[in-house]
Image (tube, rainbow, N blue to C red; front, top):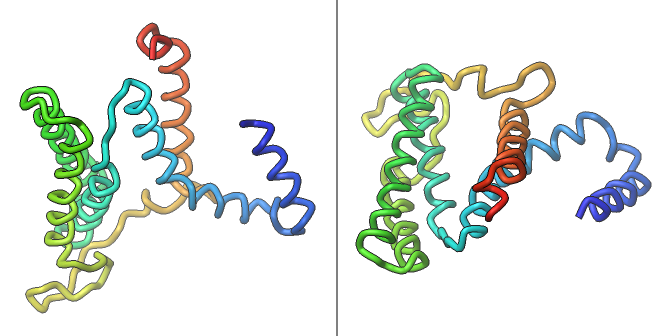
Length: 183
């Protein structure tokens, strides 16, 4: 795997003068960051024999909720993230209830959850994107803003730092804990 990445970097580095430019590297990392964080969670689930089809729609709902808490309600970063994490935890607990308590097969339960969560996200966001200065259904303008913490630390986007931290924690947990090594 590492050899493949090294070969790809070498090939694209030789093919384009700008490929190894720091700004291009940051753009590549930014574009893969969210997918990487989600993929780590899905990989751990698959490693223990679970199957969750609702991950994408849950991520969509989380995105709609956290941005709306900033833009529509003017909440701060900590509150918005904690509320969003609480909601996503409830989604996970609901899926666990369907699978463990009701004994619905994981693929079927999470497929149903996918459609329900996707519907909730679309209804909540009025079927569109949530942006700063958007016109609300009431006709008023949204007055909240997206915090700078969702921007960058220096030249590195915050999401890239989050991706690196999540990747490191997952690697350490899988490599150095008894539970992780047994997976």
